[in-house]
Length: 354
Image (tube, rainbow, N blue to C red; front, side):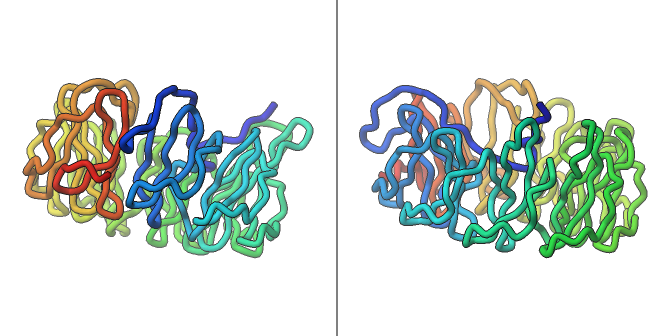
């Protein structure tokens, strides 16, 4: 059976951890999104508001990792996906085998048709506005969505469609990513990447190393890899920050996390090191703070085990001590943290929220 790549249909499986909720403690939580946060207990997910009140019952088997988007969120029950609003009302029936988040008014959806997955797009009324005929889909960004054609092999190619379903950039790319700031990363082989504009014109040569993250442009720069080292280019392809880092991520809130000699730190857009390379892992800044780890070990990209987590500000000051077993970004003034096998929320003073 051909399987759809979950890279484009991002979901969160609630799991089957056991525990008892008391004093705002859960088996798992996600950051707040549009005023509500996903919480998980005994393998079921639901939602709380910023007072800690459970406003949507903990009854779903899976919930979108990305939280609410455009007022709706994807949920799964009994192996079928649909969408609910912030009151918990089911606005799009739970009938799909996989879904993505709403973006620019449309969401990718997938059904299993005998032996193949077929995907298309629905609007917020649930109407299928782009037929279910693709096997891989990305969300709409800048009016275009990345899709891959179904064919008789696993060697389909990527192209881009508009909101009417019209193919505007032909199916010819071996790898591709979504548009961001007018450009999209693409690759014609398994080896090299470059960038195209919305007409399909190659504006930055396909010369960068293959990396499955396919970093798009953010804040005017893109993080790319060349000859095993990472640096940053602008939209003309000009090298702005030299290729010297072991790993890197795009700029957020004016700073980028970069790795050198097995330690993570932060640089600004001139390439100046503004936060020293001393952390075993670091996430990008969100709401003025970044999550950092000391003592953990990285097993895969983003898979960090052990050590302690806390938060730093843009001066590098540790404003919330590195004392947690895990942590998530601040959203709406609150962040999820894990301590002694339980998750709860803290405010920016490091105090338990409720």
